[in-house]
Image (cartoon, rainbow, N blue to C red):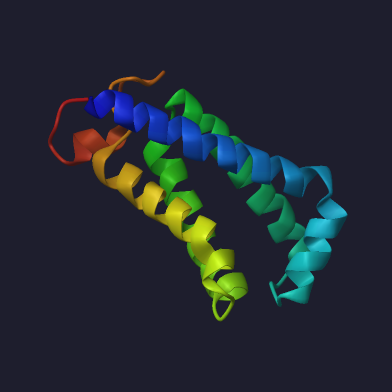
Length: 131
């Protein structure tokens, strides 16, 4: 059941990141304007960076490739979103980033599971475990 759970977690949060990344990339002007309005420096650069990390990272999660790397990038992404955009906002506005942040930390901690496209993950080798 562990592998099924990790697979479903990866697919669910991966789909959310793919969707939100695509929304950012498909209207990069709006994303840039929003980033500028909340005080993010170099808003054009970060609009593209965040959109690409979310879109490509979501695909990587679904496929089970480079999960540790993208989980870390996406966790940082969600932490920045929480601190810059959602801090002080109603809880209902922060629920999704909190859940996504928690899911990324969980995937960093336990890995992608066995049901993944790439069977070897560097994080397992660094911890002295076999992939």
